[in-house]
Image (cartoon, rainbow, N blue to C red; front, side, top):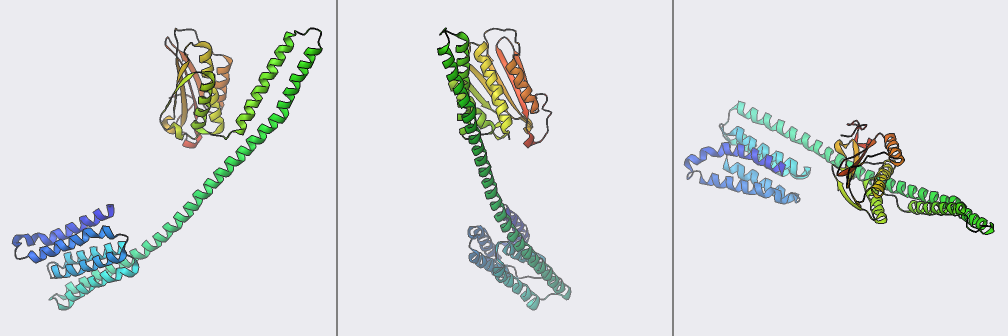
Length: 384
């Protein structure tokens, strides 16, 4: 569309200059104005046949013939008529294959040569026209050669780019498959070693309780409970390892949705500023999930409200931020516990940080990590 608009503007400039004097006596030049109408009718049909080169060749040839009848070249209009033939041959060179360019170009050259042979022109004008034709012809041949080379290189590039994308997808699948196999192997190792040892520990504690003189032994019961909880945690970890790994914000939100169902807490998500496309590593995703999990745990411990607002964003494409807001009934003195301190240390190792604040209506927890994949435009040691 852009190319057609450029050709249209150039044709209107040249043809407008040639046809403007004809309107002074339109009745006398009616057949010439009709020829101009035919020329532009065919010109507007050209885009409809952009995939049918032989139809395009026919249209260009007809326009070359129409031009020779409308404006027989003379001393005063020779330059503008040459420009019309130049536009015609240049557009044919852009749209047609090499073999088919010959036909409209040959007709245009025959018209020009007929003007030189039968027109009453001076030697200087004839030399100018010949020189003009040679320059334009050489330029069009050079353009077509370069254009053919460019198309060949473009097709090779598209082929290589397609192969590269296929190879990239294959590598990504292979990496994902290797990670999944490694996760399953680790899960199996945990299940076979730690899980079996915890089961053995529980059985030995139960045997000790039965053999002891006092059946009620609170210390043994506490140890059994702790061992059972550890065994359940191990089984959950093994189950997680066997699941397909999902990285990035999608993985974080999937884990949080699971936590929402398990903890009966209502979570409202807001995702802003390209957070979904943020290139989070697996370590960053896990740290963010643990930090948000700790924040939600504090809500369940210290707040009567069973809901929270979580916002994710990536401002400036340099850091990834999250913010947890939950309502509180009354202001209270906030004291950072061990869980939040551990989360702060984990985020700081990733070039981020964590901060918490409380007011009369809300408790707010904010955290951020640096995004290495998007550049280092921000100082992620402080939130923006």
